[in-house]
Structure formats: C-alpha cells, structure tokens
Length: 182
Image 1 (tube, rainbow, N blue to C red):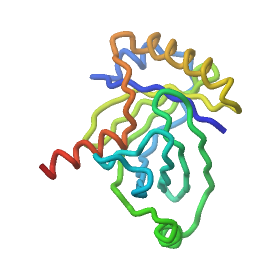
Image 2 (image 1 turned 60 degrees about the horizontal axis):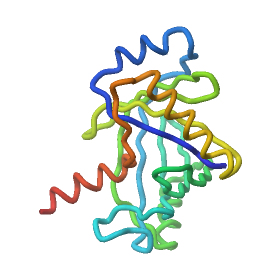
Image 3 (image 1 turned 30 degrees about the vertical axis):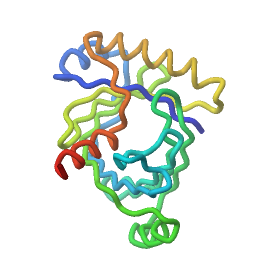
Image 4 (image 1 turned 120 degrees about the vertical axis):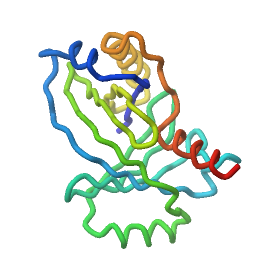
C-alpha cells in the first residue's frame, strides 16, 4: 500500500476542530511513541533520510507495538509495510543485524478523525509543535497523485491559513539534533 499524506504546522487546533464539526467521525486520541531507525546507506550528509530511503520504526501506542517500514517520498506517497509485534527488543536486535541503528524517538499526542474517506490527524509533537495531517492509503502510484491533490484540498479547507510542511517529523527532529551538535 502507498500512504499519501500532507501536513502543515498550525498555531492552534480550535478553528480546525470547528471546521471539522460534525462532518467527521472522531476516532480517538492517543499517545504515540515512535522509535526511528537509520541506516547509513539511506542517510545524507545531514543524517536525514534520502528520498526513496527506507525507515523502520517501532510505534508504541498503549500496549500495542507495531513495526513499520516506510519508503520516504516527501512529495508523493511511499510504500508502507506494517505488522504488530510482541517483542520490541528482539526486533531492535534484528534491525541492527540489517544495519539499522536507533536514531531518536518522536513522541506525540494524536487526535484522529475520519473525514470523508481521509484520515485527519491533529498532532501535538514534543519539541516540534502542532500539526494537521491529512492522509489516505491507495493501492497504486497512479492513484497517489490524485490522492495527494485531494489531501491538499482538504488541508486548505480545514486549515486555510496554514502552510504545507514537506518535511517529515523525522527530518525536523534530525535538524534539531544537528543544531545541538554545532
């Protein structure tokens, strides 16, 4: 499957929640901790994931743990594979054998909504701020372009004053880490 997502930084969720109103179904709120792994093969000189690179992450949400492999495509959808796991420690060891090493963790509070056929997420991300994400999963590259266009339209409808953010949360976190090393 290909995950298509667009995001924007916002100052507040108030207007967005009003715009969503009763048009969306609230799916829930959760705390998510994503442990991100990097492999030198997929990193640029700033230690950011290169376009088309692969990033494994372990997402912890309550008692649930999910291993995901994401192909990084910042301006179009990338392939995504996921499976639930029981033993995160064993998975970390296995990822190490594949050349991936723990890079950092991203912690966020996420409110999720189903708006039409799209997921709308309001994320408060530790050290990064508040964001709205609009996403949809599609089956093919052919569908990804149209899905991205529709995601952008919904983003502008719900957060008209926002500016699209093309960086992934991981890119933003790596920039903070890099600034701390200078």
